[in-house]
Length: 272
Image (tube, rainbow, N blue to C red; front, side, top):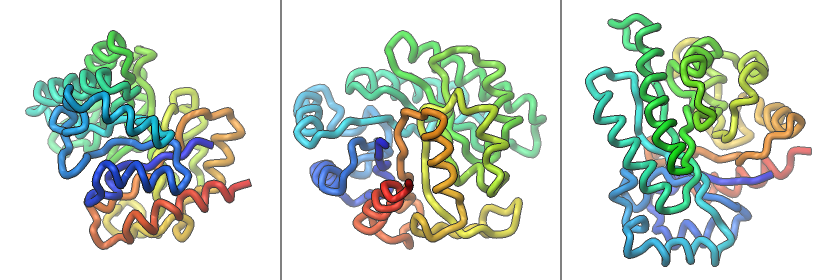
């Protein structure tokens, strides 16, 4: 079982501290979602050309790898399409330079003023452009289940339009839990062949259809069937990372990374 965490959970940590703590806690990978208050790939100091060798050497010394880059690229707002394509290409360029194997994108919302089919088609178009661009550079493009793009029908609608093998699925189990709860296999089974990366967090469920009533909590203390999901993935031969997406940057009220990161190792390594 390969464990990683996203740097979203430790926004106040330096890169050096991230590496020290990850190794100490038993992680083998880190997923970059901002470093030292910089979110865009091309603005992260550790990724500057003059710092590349030192960054890679530090990772190697700590027996760690960068497993992905979490971009903010989303294709639901029509007016931002071109700028999002450009941002995605820059993230792919930096990822290639730094040896990061994949970037994350998401669709997010279905605007009420648009037909759903049009939004799905636009997300697919943007994803297809980036998948083709990334293929030439050895960087995969992963669509995260997120926001309104968290159902089998919508996710499959996008993948039906993007045939590239360089385009794959990042399963965020909390976002599909909003829709499927304990019946996660209804989403998972038809799409399992596309899943190459996973995000985990936990929550107390609220009112169905109203995500704002769900409350994030420590891993293992909520209602997401994490044990069942992990067992299902492993039984089906999943070889990717199990990555903790602790959203401390967006939810400062959450416990710190010094609590959440060891929680994740304890919970997942305890699954038999």
